[in-house]
Length: 467
Length: 144
Image (cartoon, rainbow over all chains, first blue to last red):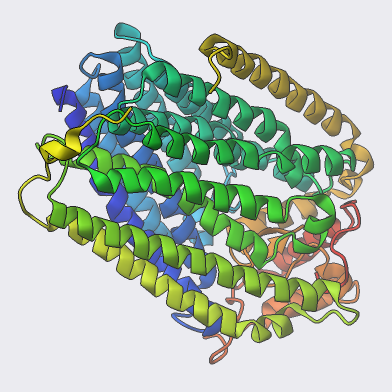
């Protein structure tokens, strides 16, 4: 570790992984509810399980982004963190607030939660992904502002690099667009329209800046490629992300009451959204091919390449699959959407956080650069089990989606929703099986942290710089 | 990447391109907001519809259903449920009211929310209002 204050990243990473386990457990419960409709009913109805599943995902990714920032920024800025104490206080505030919210979801009916948290005063609850009580939302704003202040002050007093500036822009954007979660008009169309300013402009906008920045940082560290080259790539990638992604918002404005010119704008711009993701794939592979040193942390290298590939497949290819308006007319709000959502979130955001953890954790644990070979092998098993099972989850949901779209919307004799769902059961069972493999992969991944052994080091022969 | 394509060129494309398209998004959204009254059925937003949306949100209906195609994919689309239930608010209320507390063995079932008569009227009115929004002819058919 170059700067001792980087160590505040560690609790953030541990919390992220802990909440990740919770997310997957609830995912497995929901998967089963798809085929055994009364599983855990009425104690944990589907809507509650889904809320826990998606909210835990968001919260643990935020923990991951924060941990990544605390690890990266001191090193980029070549100075200690402005206030490690503030970082630790905010960690506990965020963890306790997050845990209380999840307990609230599980302990009382949602309507009761809305009542006791004062949703009547400023109604913001009950909208997809923004189910948190209003006070939790306010808490998130406070934590994120404190976090950005801490990161911003560190950058301000140290070296300003492209990586840290892009990261800061991404984080500020994250905070700014979250404010739209407090706008909840009675007019459903307006509500939906600006709900996307949180959801779309996060995951297909400013989060890509954070993703690009973490990717660039780890590639510099792992490959030793010149910073000038990496930063040029980073600028081009995030330029394409925002040039396509901002008006790409239009692909959500097809059928929610907004004017029909969005059919064209949304189709054209979102059809180009795979470009930045494909560039990320090229970026990762090019930099690793041009590496000027071998890095003993091979697991981290695997994660960084995996992110490049899976982000492109999940966000790029599976997004493109249903983004053109004439296609989306049939696939909108079907299992195709679910398929895309799963692989995109895993490939882009889960994997970039795990990339960062893979690179940083050995260093945070006091090693020079890497875990033992044994530990890395277990970690790579975790990588492959999770990644391959996520590919299968996506394929099975895509199969279910195609069949659903045909039976319910495309055929001459459209069938009712539940009649169709019954015919998809085989796909849902296979998805559930793949989900259990994912869970096993996650436990394998976690086990790798407990595998001891001497730090992996390069043999002299390996240490030859390739040119 | 090519040597003649410099980092500062890349930076300028990022700042220029992002700013331009952000302004485009803001401009188009502003235009959309001004023409929405022709499409969004706002003339039918009564206090009862407003209460219905509140009931919809306070019970996290979006956690299972889609509304205009957005939400969860566990239960039927409700943007057109008013049409599907034969334009009958009573049918909608009756369905919600009759959900068994302990569910249906082996099947998906909507929870029993114990809504008051006022809340039932409001949610039905909200779903009727939703069904009259101009959605570019979505969903493709009555099944949602």
